Image (cartoon, rainbow, N blue to C red; front, side, top):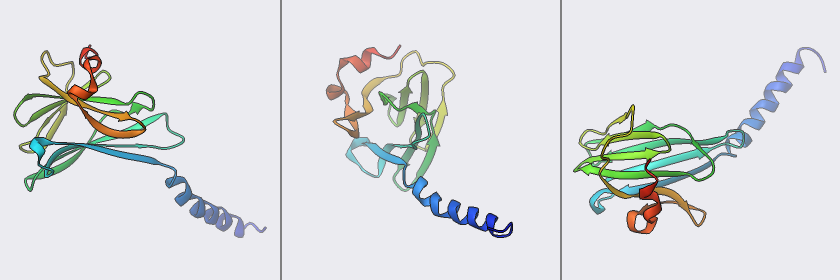
Length: 152
């Protein structure tokens, strides 16, 4: 192989391998429908690659035709994925992920990470978790009392 064709061969191999590597990602999504209306929802999107150590996580806030935004959360370890969802007031939701706490305001799809745990996160609605190899939202009654006690 000549010096001139070596870069072309490398580029060709890289271009052929890129779609294969991109296709290796595992992606899941689960959503919580606010008041039973699919236009108003909180969705968790998670994605993991074979070479990464955990899930890349996004929250999508959707308020009908008013707004829809995607927000980045902290990465989550692959095992025991769980994000708890609380509601302290109408239109406001608090998410708890390991040591991270977030607030989402549905009126304008705002989102912010708390610097410390809120003193009263509100009513536990449930959790985004993996159940029977399916990523889903599990309502508080089905999630069990253990998740409510894990708030530390």
